Amino acid sequence: MINKELKILGISKANLGTSTGTKQFAKGKFITSYSPVDGKEIAQVQCTTKKEYEKVIETAQQAQLSWRNIPAPQRGEIVRQLGDKLRQLKPTLGKLVSYEMGKSYQEGMGEVQEMIDICDFAVGLSRQLYGNTIHSERPGHRMYDQYHPLGIVGIISAFNFPVAVWSWNAALALVCGDVVVWKASEKTPLCAIACQQVLAEILKQNKLPEGISSLITGDAEVGNWLSEDKRIPLISATGSTRMGKEVAVKVAQRLGKTLLELGGNNAIIVTEEADLKMTLIGAVFGAVGTAGQRCTSTRRLIVHEKIYEQVKKSLVDAYKQLKIGDPLDSKNHMGPLIDQDAVAMYSKAVQSIKAEGGKILVKEEVLKGKGYESCCYVRPVIAEVENHFAIVQAETFAPILYLIKYKGDVENAIALQNEVAQGLSSAIMTTNLRQAEIFLSQNGSDCGIANVNIGTSGAEIGGAFGGEKETGGGRESGSDAWKVYMRRQTNTINYTTSLPLAQGIKFDF
Ligand code: UN1
Image 1 (spheres, rainbow, N blue to C red):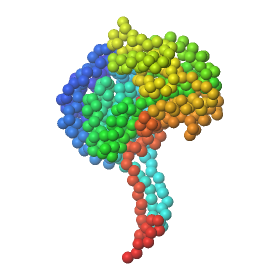
Image 2: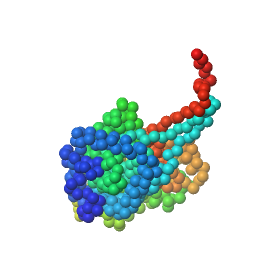
Image 3: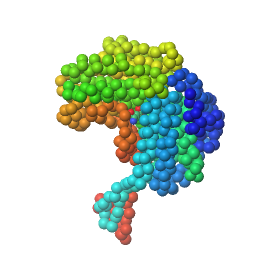
Image 4: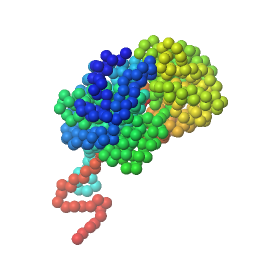
């Protein structure tokens, strides 16, 4: 099914282990990658041992010493080559993403496009790592701030975006003069090896040290090595809030920096003045795209009572038309969940909805029979609930959409939208300027992303991506998110022959 693609991506038995590029030395236990598409084993991948980990970090440290001395625009040139290679590989890597992770081929290709986009962004950025100049209060003094490379960036990523999240971090970190060590999800190890191979090959062609980019493989224990390692000044971690809290504590204990992208509980507010056709498209894609396994997936729809019944009916009708099956077949709208554990979580969540008094409008079902042999395919669910239900307050990584009714002004809907622990993405559907502006104001959405007349998912790389509260507060990707990958220095230069003190302090002797 995927052998041709693996070959093009340079993956063979020889490199199914830890890699800093050309030298393979993984000797740890094996993890098996199964496709949720058909349940078949794709390959066994060797995990990193502690001894190998030490070697990886030493190699990375060594590589950083030379990499940081290469001018930023030249580092950008390497990232440009990465983007070019990804352009060529887009359908191939997109197919591997789809097959190993289970998202639709369209979304798999979209993910590779996000990688290309961030490479383009980073290339431009490599000539724009600007600091400020500051007017000194002292005569004959000049002040400015500048950004220096940080060192090693540890990247911990999740299964749902098995290639893009690495690239958001790696492309920026590389132009900033850092080197990267990546611990990918153990559920999608082949996607990780493919990315590592592509970059390793480019480094080799440019005669650069292989330690500029490394991959380590394994479970949470391997991630802990990174979090606890004083040699790694920044850990960028994407995943659940539970994981993020563990990482945050470990990194904080050594006063390292973290960039955390954790859970979302994203809502679309649908006011009585919404364009209902757009609402329907935005809500359905947001809820069932990537089978509800995006951090930005739409989990809650907060609908004004005047249009509630109409929205409910059109959603239920739309869900009846959804085709679930092989994500590589373009006629299907939704593929499988990542594995059977995720299916169990979905089923448990539905039980909780019922137990708390929610009403199921579109029924749950784990699909069986031909085409569903992996037992990972489920029917997306719609439920009528109250915002305060414990299950609604939690992020369930599955296609379950909650309908919540609100009355009165848009402020009431905003209060409900904000009454969760997470703060990643949010949206309002309205044609009323006042409602939209209130939603975007300081009294509005408390999320890192707030959209008007589009859904909660599908952010572009040009903006800073991330969220508040239990989402972790980190920002990656566009805007000035690059600053977290660098260390900042304030410089004051005195070009006089006297030494006046700041704040006018006199010190004569
Ligand atoms: C994620 O779900 O981890 O906004 C990232 C989006 C994508 C990124 C999602 N650009 O849906």
